[in-house]
Length: 326
Image (cartoon, rainbow, N blue to C red; front, side, top):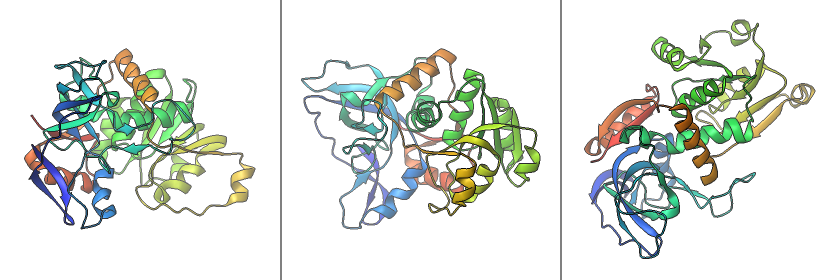
């Protein structure tokens, strides 16, 4: 099968051997795969001498073959791939054995994947293949951050800096579905308009003075994955006693802040990472209930995978970047 791999310090297309499924494994013929910023970071985390690794965490496709002990899925089932490996039940933090699909396990930027039957969920019938492939990692990450960790209520106002990110589009949709008030930002007027169409109540320019623009707002929760670039600005508009949820650091990891001002403000700083199978199922049920449409920015072919990664790295997208495989 053809796949995009990292090998000998670089990325290239390669013919890879497809293993036979084990007793509780299935073969999924992939129809589409979704890109994440994680895919950009993986080459820098691997040694040149390591064997070829298929990248990709998100995917959707059709069950083509099943192992002899598989009981919950059948050949022909349409499924999405759960990229959260070996984390089944909700817990305060991931278990020790938790990994994310795409390193060290082979991922979804390929024509097929062999994976445990526990790692696939039924594809929502109303979603296209591209929309289904856009869902798992970003929606799961956003669902845990907003509801499991943040416990957002319909009476709350949530601030989400950076409207164009894949997770951000789900955060906006999730919050609006339950009736919460959403404030978001972008440097791009085009992205700001798209955020308004997605349902955001207040959309401001990232370059604006946030304290001034939001002086009449009461922000109950911030969900910020940018790291150092926006940490202090986001914290400054959060109400005293409010929740600051973070699940990423796309700029810098290390942030220095005034601890005394923080504890005087009675703020709550909450970390979140991905999510478990229970939460993915809950996110899918939420999507079904509200007929949530994943936001797909642009679709590339498998042969254009390197172009897709380059496009993602530019950061111009609004929503998810997708590889159409079949």
